Length: 161
Image (cartoon, rainbow, N blue to C red; front, side, top):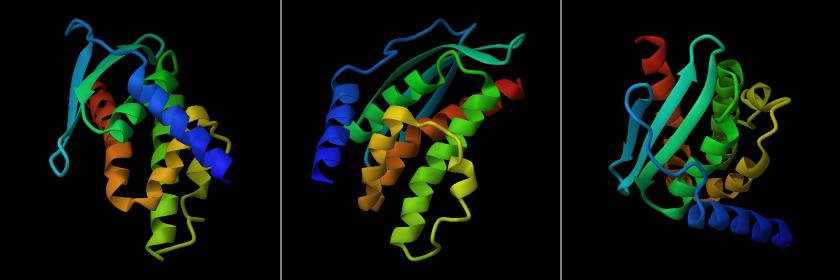
């Protein structure tokens, strides 16, 4: 198991040191969405372009600052959703949050996680699985999910614009 933890640590550090999709996009046509965790100061800024004709995330850029977990998660999220149709993006959001919640609820003895298993079924998380070790440190779960909450907020704002 130590080998897997080392691999996960390397994936997180790689995304932190060399974030994917770093930069800004012109607003409009991009939609700007910001997330902030006042507990630790993590900040995520997303620039999203969704093609209304195809309901696809055609471009995404990320900015912000914070701990290695929040910034690596933001990089991984941007790589995972770029070019994806919105139904897949929403499925990824649910799956990632379920991954964090399943482990969190097991740690807190609330449930065995089976109630969230359906959100994970059939979803390939790829590099995002490296973040599952974060749940050993419950205070860091908010760091890992900040980008995902910001993405979800941005997509809701776009849908209601």
